[in-house]
Length: 192
View 1 (cartoon, rainbow, N blue to C red):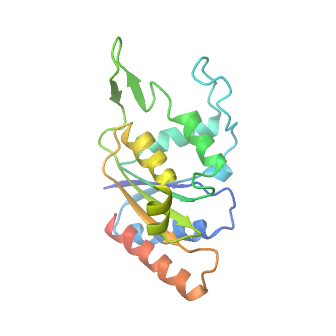
View 2 (view 1 turned 180 degrees about the horizontal axis):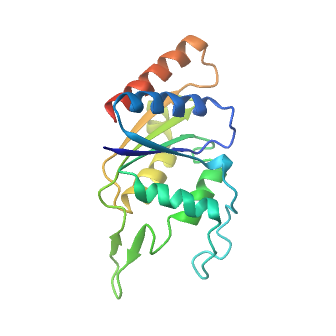
């Protein structure tokens, strides 16, 4: 049975991203998979990597539990908005605190290379925008996707990583949002 972790990175628990996570979960449940969720806004942790990598910060219990879910999962579904071209600060802090050397990757001694400790996992990023996805890609080079997909997940061995853009959210009507939710439910059903 495939194991899915749905990670909601929106700090507002009443956002459209909550509906997206629910739609994906509903579709995935139709496929008979096992699902666990991480709602970053519900976690109690310091998102600031206070000492960088010079000194290890102790992980709070919520981060330990979240890491156990990430290790458990075969497939990671990341849901988040794009703000100022990037990830919400709380989500970025979650990644900074958890995707650590020795956890997600390990540098090799006397080498520029590293071991990817999350090999064998796949992922899907579902991101909401206040612009069309093609515009975000063409005009800005999709910085949040590059950061999460290439500089984090693929760096740690997660591959392939698919991406779905939903936008323009700001002015969307209920009819459009319903279509997006049905699309996301289909992604969950097809586990893409």
